[in-house]
Image (cartoon, rainbow, N blue to C red; front, side, top):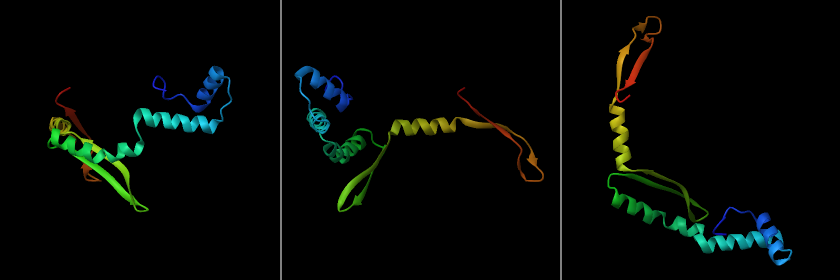
Length: 126
């Protein structure tokens, strides 16, 4: 399973039949695969439980970042919805890039609609 975790239950079923000459029901192979993947990678729930800690560590190691963990309550349980990360260097780079845009010419207003007919904005870096 470590070499090819994406191998499906049908393929595993065929490999087990070839190697051990036994017919193993599909549902047993599927359940066994899930248990093995849990043993290798850990359970999904455990990963979600670590998200608040991961968020705190991100904010501590990269101050000024935006890290949002969105959850909702569903039948008494707190459920994960989404996780948003914008690291401070990326935010700074985005705003620096935005300031590098400038408008070098605009065409006169359309007299009937009172709006610019067209314009051309250029990026100073290209």
